[in-house]
Length: 303
Image (cartoon, rainbow, N blue to C red):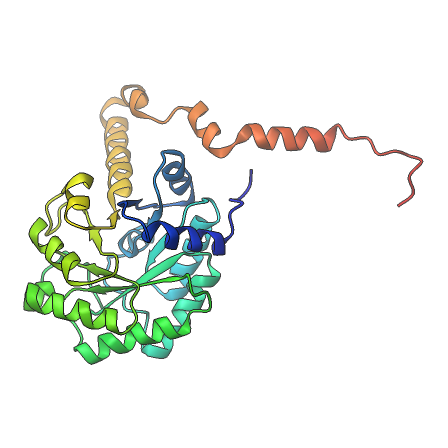
């Protein structure tokens, strides 16, 4: 009932513990708090909060228009509804190194288990679009050092994302990943890899966990979890998938209303009211309400 009972500190410690093993951790992207609860209910290991999804939720493109406050506020709403660790897309850190440091502490306060900071220039763009630009290595390293130095909980995961593969090739991306690990990054996110071999090359080159982004309609093929695990990947995200499925369903429903004047044809694909109430824990709330309204205080007790 109400919010998750696992503390942020416990979620971070659990993520660190699992990353110390050899399993592949699956982090579907939550587009709202209820979808985060559904991700937990289905048995996944974590929740991902995508910058592209947060932008789209506001009706904006993913070109660096959202603010750290907007991202933190939405992240807080999501993290408090799940016992799973959540990682957020912190774009370029929302400014210069001091802003990056503040972003880390703001995201800690929002209950997140970690974040990733990328090496694109401001304003950034979606990692699977053409025309990206990256900062020089010194600036990228400075961002990571600022993030690592700012965290107060040593278990808070600071991940370095590099987009340099698209502009300078795989070899440079591997060299940059190594430098970002040397700067203190706990994990690496090589964006827009061309094939499974490239993921494997990055994973073999660094001694920290590597994340694979399995976004639809992007530069990377949609590999299976088994394939990614065999390539040495430790975290896989499906950042926009649930939003795409939900918006696809919403569009079909609106089309049905226009053409048919009813949603009868769409009912079979809807989440049933009973299932929604189960996710919302209506039974728990009813029990709580009943205990309040049926409670009769002892008149002999003075308060």
